[in-house]
Length: 102
Image 1 (spheres, rainbow, N blue to C red):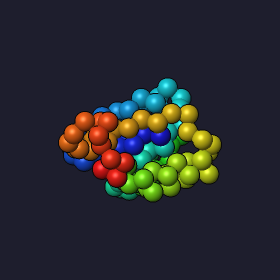
Image 2 (image 1 turned 180 degrees about the vertical axis):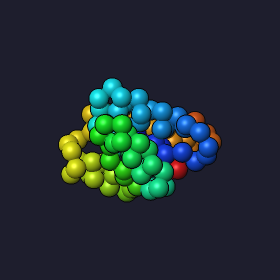
Image 3 (image 1 turned 120 degrees about the vertical axis):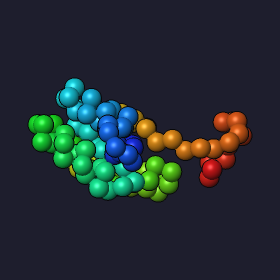
Image 4 (image 1 turned 60 degrees about the vertical axis):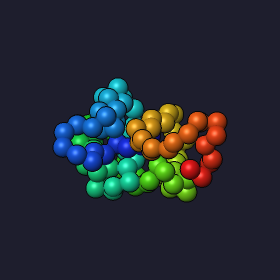
């Protein structure tokens, strides 16, 4: 599962590059992005090249979205063999002092 697999701008994003790299290595890739169109674009690119990909809409900053995304992948394939997070969320403070809800 690659979180942040879409692109918010022009060109190839880090998340897209990760999804393509995993697919080229033979992995089935769940392309997760908060923008369903972005997830769909990279999924179509992977599938068109002969890979296996699934587009999943989820906001990685929302625990319920992440849980739903994982459940969707489990239902479609099986439990994910790996998780790649390419979503950055700015939070100030020390990691040990950060609240779960932050």
